[in-house]
Structure formats: structure tokens, C-alpha cells
Length: 333
Ligand SMILES: Nc1nc2c(ncn2[C@@H]2O[C@H](COP(=O)(O)OP(=O)(O)O)[C@@H](O)[C@H]2O)c(=O)[nH]1
Ligand SMILES: [Mg+2]
Image (cartoon, rainbow, N blue to C red):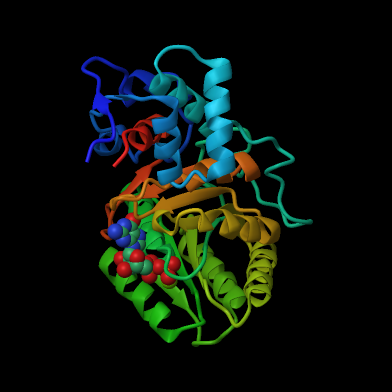
């Protein structure tokens, strides 16, 4: 059902691509652009009234406050067709650089080189003695374990030596799930006993990586605990212990499921308070969800999306493309 007419000649995501700064010297570039094109579909921006635009933004899960703000920005700062103005406003919001204070690590726990100042930059993998540690966090069922496997594949494909840490010790099945991915990827997995100390698992994984000359440890974590406070304390402990290890925590990726709508903002608030993620992985964008909640998250918490998940397979990870995202968002259902 089309809410609006499509215009024959209009701006597509491609037209905006050059406005978006490419991440500099990121060892992540090998997630190459040809893959991204799958998610920069040839969509033409629709012709919209402001009312239709508001409806589309609300349906895309931007929430009322963010929708109003985007509409206001579009009206105040840009000219042209409604959808073009909105796209530029969305793009401006999504590509706002993080300030160093906003991205500072919690307490004394340093998150080294966490891509400060560059919205899309993913911290590179350390090349020296200290393995990089990436923690993958988020509530239950959002796609953390799958994302760990996808990230491991992408990094392995780029020639990095990856060790996985099964730090979701809350359920035995979670460890088995990661083991299955590790076997398929042919990467080593460090795990502990079910219900064991997840911080110790991460610590051991770093030792293991160090001993074998691996340069990256990617840790899966639990999304469900007896209480929320419990979970946050556990994550803080993992972070503390990881920072005392021989490795360097360079990414804390918060996984948000695009199908959970505006709920993602409250999840982001909670995780932001306890471990200050360095970026977001927005999963399940292969369905009908637009994931517009990340615009609110970016606005409120200055937390940028770094990757998107577009399926359940190992290769279904893409680098986030704000222009393509904005276009898709405005193109409605
Ligand atoms: N369609 C789709 N499904 C996904 C994606 N990422 C994860 N899933 C599925 O979501 C479910 C939960 O994923 P899992 O990684 O176990 O979540 P976790 O509890 O956060 O570790 C699984 O069935 C995954 O296959 C995605 O990008 N797209
Ligand atoms: Mg899991």
C-alpha cells in the first residue's frame, strides 16, 4: 500500500553518499562497499506532505519527540521537496560526531581508541602485543551471539586472528550456540562453566589470544539476569577485568533489535549508564522494521550505529550507511 507517489527523478542514497565522510584508515574497510550496495537500494524519495512525512517517521519508530525535532530541522535548515529536506535532516542527525566527553569511558575504565570523533569509525584491531577486545552487549534475543559470529567472520576474512569468549554463562545453551559458530568459523572459543564468572572467561580468552598471537577477542555477554542491576554490575565487572588484562577494550557494541521499536531507547539508556557503549549494531533490518529508534538514540545519547544485521547468516552484516538508511526510512512500507 503506497501512502504516497514516487517521483521519477529524485535523490537516491547514492547522491548523498559523497557527503558522508569515509572512516579514515579503518582496518574495517574490507567490509567493502559492494556489500553495502545491497542496502543502498535504488529507491526514489517519495513526494510527501508534512503530515505524511510525520506519519512515516512515526511508523518507522522515531518516536514523537524525535519526529518533531527532525521535521523542525528539515523545515528550518533545508530547502526543496519535503522528503529531500527530511533526508538531509536525518543524515545530519545520524552523522553527528561524538564529542570526546560524550564518548568517555565509565569511571577509570579506559576504552582505548574507541572511534572518538568519527561517527562511523570502528576501532581497528591492535597490531601490536595487546589484543583488542570487543564486548558485545544487549538484552536477550536481540542478536548478540549471531552478531559476535558475524563480526568474527568479517574480521577473519580480513586476515585477523580472532578468539571468541563465551561470556554469556547464564545459560548453557548460549555457550553451545557460540561453540557451533566457532566450529563453523574455525576460530577458537574460550568458555567457562555454565553459571561461571563471565569476567574470568574474558580474561582467559585474552590470555589465550596473547599466547597464540591472536589480535582480537570478541566476547559474547548475557542479556538476561535475575535483575537488571545484576546484569549491569556483571557487565561493569567484565569491563573492569578486561581492562586489567593484557588486552585493550576498544569496542563495546550495543546490539539493538530493530523490531523492538521505541523500546530500544530505554535499553540504550540503561546500557549507556553502566558501560557506555562505543556504538550500536542494529539487527533484523531484513524484516519490515525500519529501525528509526536509532535516530532517537543518536540524538539523546550520541551513540552511533556502526553495523546493521540483515539476516541470520554469517555474511549478513553490513557497515552502516546513514544515507541509505535515511532513504529507506522515508520510503515507507
Ligand atoms: N532476521 C534476522 N534475524 C536475526 C538477525 N540477527 C539475529 N537474528 C536472530 O535472532 C535470534 C536471536 O539471536 P541471538 O544471536 O541468539 O540473540 P542473543 O540472545 O542476543 O544472543 C536468532 O534466531 C537469530 O538467528 C538479523 O539481523 N536478522
Ligand atoms: Mg546469546
